[in-house]
Image (cartoon, rainbow, N blue to C red):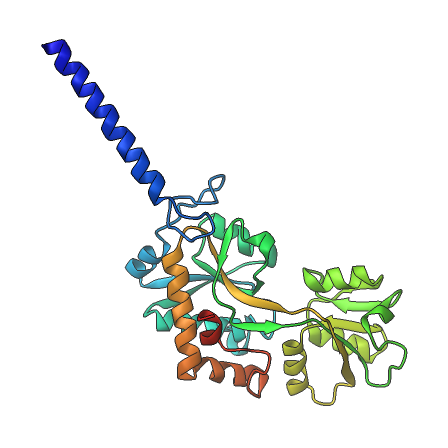
Amino acid sequence: MRGTKSIQRIRLLSLFTLIGSIMLAGCTVNSNDRVPTPNMGVNPYRVNTGYLLRNAVERGTLRIATERDYPPFSYHGTGGRLTGFDVEVAEEVARHMELKAEFVETEWKNLLPGLTEGKYDAVFNQIEDRPDRRALYDFSVAYLSSTPVLLVRSDEDQVRTFPDIKGKRVGLNPTGTYNDIAKKHGAIIVPVKYIYDAARMLARSELDAIISDPLSVTNLKQQFPDMPVTTVQSANQAFEVSAAFVKGNPDLVAAVDNALATMQQDGTYLTIWNKYFGDAPSSYKGIHDRKNK
């Protein structure tokens, strides 16, 4: 009888295991869904995902990375205080989440790797939501959209379109989309970090053109209205800028999305926009509308 009971127990245990496996299999969701499983998508790295929002609430702070050296989006202003469009948006996101923004300043090349290393909770720094980045990162709804533009001197008549920059000296921040466009059209790339410096070089004929974004150009014109530069073409491509997070924290992504939507509804976002760029954002379609598509 003892042997029979043991066999029965083994059979029952096997049955329960099988049932449990079937139930778990039935609960499996599509891999495209955001599910807070430990280390989802970042197993080779050192971060333990799935708890970032809870930890932020316990600390009372949202840890936000930014480049610190990319005006007008993130830079040190009067008195050395960190400021900029992305910085102020991030501050308001944290405030709407009833948290305090805790900024971590770093270089561009370290922004996304720092997420997977657990150094901070989010990145607000003109990060483009691209398919090749979604293997490791999740993104908020877009908080602005933009497109590359071509600037030349006001009296320039040889460079009017992107194909015209072949063999020409083109100033740009040598990362990402702008660099790709210049290479595609055979330009001589001149790395210039700040659009203000590039505009001065263009005015002195040290450059033939600049590739930048319309928001930086708008900010440039606000500060230097007499700068003899003009936009001659916009690229036929647009990119959306979002906050970035390490995968596995859907509650944090949702909380930031909700904060951004609330900011669009209560006018906070527009107040920040007007401070840096003037008129209402014509390229911005509305966070709330995008969220509910």
